[in-house]
Amino acid sequence: MEDASKPAGESRVRRRTFLIDSKFQLKYTLIIVLVGVLVSALLGYFIFKLNLENRELLGIEAEMMAHVEQIDSKSMYYLFGFVGVMAMFLFFWGIFITHRVAGPIYIITRYLGEIRDGKTPDVRPLRKGDELQPFFDVFSGMLDSIKQRNEQEAKLLMKLASEVKDKGGDPLADAAKALAELSANKQS
Image 1 (spheres, one colour):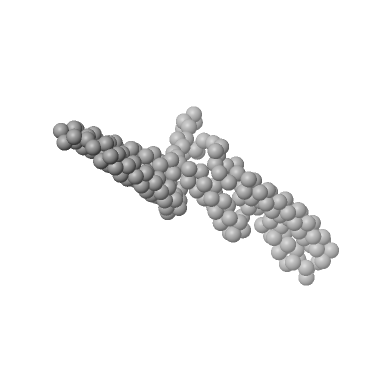
Image 2 (spheres, rainbow, N blue to C red; image 1 turned 90 degrees about the vertical axis):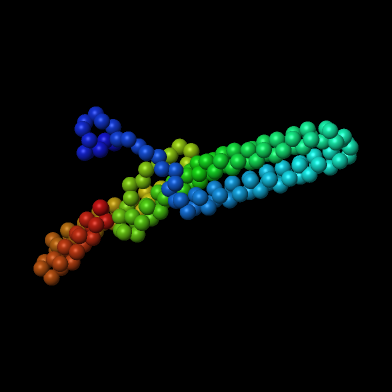
C-alpha cells in the first residue's frame, strides 16, 4: 500500500515497534530476567561453596593457596559476566516474545473499539509468527458473521423501507426514511 503523500514509486518505510504495550511487555520480561538471574546466582553460589569445601578437603599448601584464590576470583568474574550476558539475552528475548503476544492483543483491542463505536472493522491477518493465531481466527470468524448479518439486515431493511414508502403514503414516509437510514448505517 502506497502513501498518497509520497511521490509515485517511493515505498512507505515500515518501522517495527517492539514495545507495543510497554507495561505488559516490561513486566513479564523483567520477571523472566529476574528468575534467570536468581537461578544462575543461586547455582553459582552453590558451585562456589562446593569449590571452597573441595579446597579445604584437599589441604592445599599455603604457597599454592594464593594461586588458587586468584583462580577462584577469576571464576567469580566469569560467573558475574555470564549472569550479565544471560540477563541481557533474556531481556531482549523476553521483549521479542512478548511482542508476539502484545501485537495481536493490540489489534484485537483496536477492533473491539471499532465495534464499540458501531463500525465493523476490516480485519487483516496477524503477522507470521504471532501468537494467539487460533483465538484470532475465531475472532475474525465472528467479525465475518457480524458483517454478513449486517448486510442481510441492511437488505431486509431497505426492502421494508421501500415497501412502506410505496404503500404507506405520507404517514409512513418518516418511518420509511428512518428505515432507509438504518439500512445505510448497517451497510457501512
